[in-house]
Amino acid sequence: MERLKVFSGNANRQLAEGICRRIGVAVGDATVGTFNDGEIFVEIRENVRGMDVFVVQSLVDSVNSSFMELLILTDALKRASAKRITAVIPYYAYARQDRKVAPRVPITAKLIADLIVTAGAQRVLTLELHAGQIQGFFNIPVDHLYARPILLAYFKEHYKEVPITIVSPDAGGVERARAFAKRLECPIAILDKRRPRANEIDEMRIIGDVQGRVAIIIDDIVDTAKTVCMAADALLDHGARSVSAFLVHPVLSPGSVERLAASSFEEIVVTDTIPLKDQAKRVEKIRVVSVAQLLGDAILRIHKEASVSSLFD
Image (cartoon, rainbow, N blue to C red):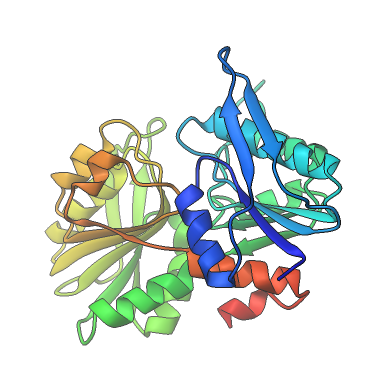
């Protein structure tokens, strides 16, 4: 792997180390810090001329700072004559602003894509985009990964010989739920929600059979956790034996951890696309599975010009 380098911003250092262990390289030597006035400073401390470089950075925590770190790292690597720069974005923030929902509002997900390309990225590798059409916002190749292999492996180990129903939290997630259900050979159910405004639920109905079954909610993001906690209660009210959730990106805005801790869930499985907050680490029912192996395998395939889609065959 002499021509392959992996660098990381501050948002995903631990995940980057896991990726590097998987592919057998060390995390690239770079300084990423701030000046006293808050400006971000980056220095690449090793030769990357002619290298195939991957920059691992979720847009999390202080979202705008982590985004600027990604842009500045990319610019520094471009000016250091890297042959190709791939932005590895485990969690793509602003993805929920993917269309105009009212007059005079921006399509911020598109703006983010434009800035990443302008900074010098020649390829993007990301995981479980909130809206698949965001791939089309880029004029460079985008490899969009799914957490499905990780979840399936977890299910096969922890949910043997129990009747399962995969639950989609809304109509938009039906395709994701159906893909899981097909491989687990189990039915699906759909939560039909009525939202008077963002992050509020007025009414919730369940379409499908959950009676006497383990209901497992599949979703890409857990933010306020209000919806999934209401869904857990509704599923139990409809006769589910127990309720668990697999929520890929643990955004976990203020108040969400308390809601999950007090919820009816038997367990909540999340990934490390976003580092878990200390408060969430203390909640026993929240468990973390790593995407390092999945991202590492995808990076190796991109580097070797092999198929990435075959990871999901």
